[in-house]
Image (cartoon, rainbow, N blue to C red; front, top):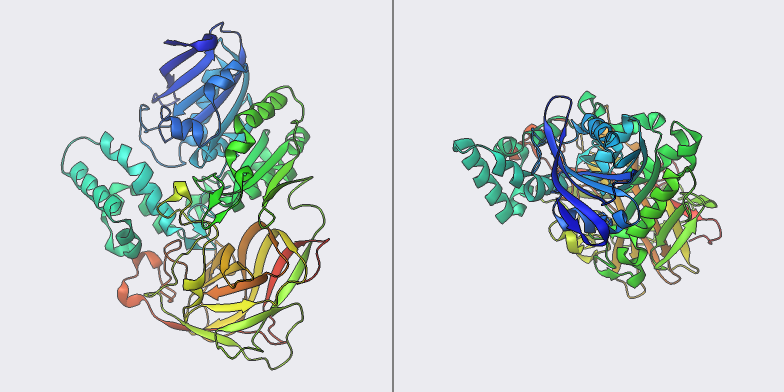
Length: 585
């Protein structure tokens, strides 16, 4: 036990027994007088003693919180660092949280009220805890985290988030797991596999699942993720979003426009606002969305500087979280607006009564092929197309995929946002397998605040393919920067739990969700849409056959002709959520 300044006591490695006898260990910050206080709990697999992971990323200073009258507990999750047991992502978190909270409530320094906080997987430990509705859990602050662990965590639109899942394994999870293994040939092989991945991550991205069986030995759970490409019982068993109606917690949800888990954060906020178990919980949901990417909550994102005010440090998240928890424990509302979001383009913070902001209306821009000599370029117009307008087409080759350039990625350099967020799209738009549709210069500012989706009338010569779409801001000098993008694996066009092959060359309407954003396209700028069939290595490659992607070999990957229609009978359109006081594009 260590006596810290200001009469704060820090206890390290405190054992906490689980129902099956496994011991998890935690660090505790509390007032030396031992007076019963509310407890703020963080359950993380990233080392409770790592200041960067446990404090900086989560925006919570434990000593400051203890000085404000809270007890702070940081616990290594099962099988991680100082805690015993075997780590299997997501599987044990609900039960272990229930047992941990029950143990906390039995401590003499605890008054029975518990809040939870933390980012990324540490948000997952909160949502899984809340789904079990343990007695005493009052409030949560899930940051930069998904609503469930199939859609937006492991897969998006049915396509695997390849670069994220692989990097999560070899950058974060595998090292401590390998270090815990008993000496012997299996541990030696796992260590060699990990060293090779860290030395050359691009080779891991380029290889196919069938070519890397050693990954199953390094991280058995990764093999499970690959083997379950649909939202089946495997994923449903660990889906907290299915239990919003059982959650009784207030929530402060912190998200980033360029974070790969953005849609999950928004879904949890909306789900608890509408379906939480009590009226008090429904009324006490709050949302903060910055321009941030995963791991990078700074003012620079990609190629753009958003200003000093965009830095998470400007918000003082410790103060904001403590104010939220204080209000929740008192049974009152938080002393700040329900929604605070950063409006990109204008590069300023805005507040709102809810999300999406009141006053948002849908505005359609139609994909037109007329007026351009280039076979890959078309126009975006508010006017619907006439009969007889010709389609645009391209050849998609999964062995030569469109590269990931910016967006909500987890590519190397994530803590600096080097590869994520708004990036120059010139190299993408120069490719023959990317269609580009552009508006005329805007006559007035246009603010998009909400979901962006694409109703795409298209056909493929293949029995399966991916449709990708990216919203782009084109500046007056012609440079183009991505805003938000999405993907649909065509076999899942009827739903993420149902796969159905394409009929080659049969036109169908596909709905591609690009995602959610808050962006002002300024006067003189143009709005652009990219349409393609790959975004690699953010997403895995589709062999463009209706076969199991996990077992596909190089000979199974086939090129295909993709046709995008834009005539009166098959009017493809980009649908924007626009603040109603804005003029038409």
